[in-house]
Amino acid sequence: MTTRSYTFSHAIARKPSIRIVDGLRAVDTGTPDLVQFQQDHDHYVSLLESTGAAVTVLDPLDDYPDSVFVEDAALCLPEAAIAMRPGAPSRVGEAAMMAPVLSRFYSDVVSIAGPGFIDGGDILVTEREILVGRSARTDAAGIAELTQITAHWGYQVREVNTPAGVLHFKTDCSLMDEETVLATRRLSGTGCFDGYRVINTADGEEAAANAIRFNGLVIMPAGFPHTAEKLSAAGYDVRQVGNTEAAKLDGGMSCLSLRFSPPD
Ligand code: CIR
Image 1 (cartoon, rainbow, N blue to C red):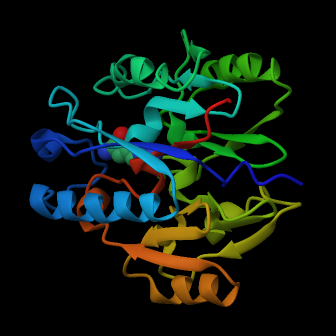
Image 2: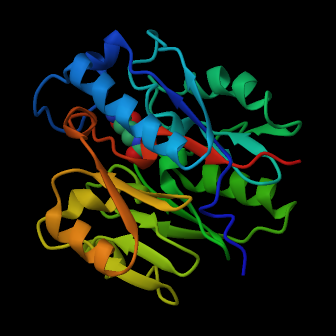
């Protein structure tokens, strides 16, 4: 059994832009505060770096208010990087901005050409398969193109459903290790993780589901003590990062980085 689905030598993040106030959101719960966002982002990056990973922090992209959420623009596999085709019109150009950055690390950078759409936030890579959630951002054609591209390296893509009203598949789940997933009950109850060990978020703490396993750490949003306790009790080294400002834009821990180990 390998651990390459959560062991990474590198990450890419992007500083939040002053235009973050124009970021997409399902419900307006207030204007994100850039200074608070920057502080939380610095903390997040420092935790990634504390594991020994090399973290590239890109400059803000003021033309793309949501570009701090780099995960949606690409999928990084051990063999190659794939620039996505984000499903929100204001975000589709982020993939082309990310592709040259990926080329610094990968000789093989492929792009989803369309006509379908697919966001990185809908993709959960485990040791045994790639799960992709259909969502308002990711459609059948996007999944079909990813399936065809990744088959080249022997990956199995399994299409699953993102719960109604949930932005991305990974808004509601995270990989904890080779056999364990953290998920909301509304998602795990669909049976999509049958065959995995599932840790459900505590009741009322569904927003804790978007966490990341990054090398030895589980990095989760602050403010969800019961879920943090469950994860600690299960033996994970849990670290909490303030997420109040990203949450106003439906963003969380996974969205803020691309995590990968480039080919040798
Ligand atoms: C959006 O609606 O696209 C952004 N405001 C939030 C993206 C969050 N990304 C993610 O869950 N992977």
